Length: 195
Image (cartoon, rainbow, N blue to C red; front, side, top):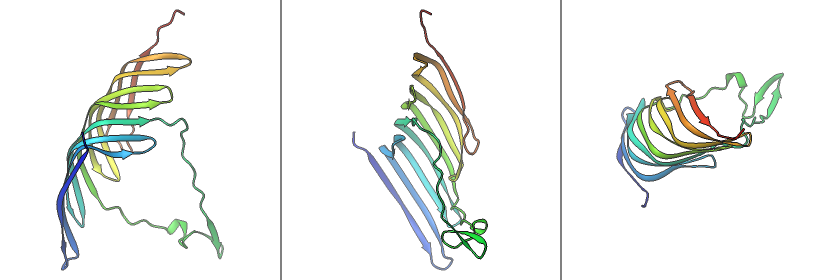
């Protein structure tokens, strides 16, 4: 089955006020929107984005057809190196701005109201884990600080630990709307052996 992305909509500019009106709809069918070393995902569904110069609203229903999440063997952030040049006794970051006075422009506000259905075929693998998940999530809040609520439940899974293979009997990942998302993970696994 071939992937399909259909988009329609418009952008109206108002030269008198300097503003604009945006109205766009996107339909997805088996579209691979995420592809990286750590994750890949194919989605279907409908997403509508409407707004103006003050902000936008993204609303839709999506279904994950297939997703692969790979837990890296090495985790931890890489610390970037910053070039600092001292001018007249005060440190300035590259670009000439003083670090404490550097300011960012506020992000364009996009309010989210997106429901995500995960019927199955969402795999989490790596570091001894091989599992498949299903569930439903709701994404609200703003794009720069999304609030996720809902639950993922394990369909099947194995976990290799201390030279023993554990079968995951029950498992859930619950999201309660915190930002950043901090899920509650509950797993029950067992392994049988003669000893």
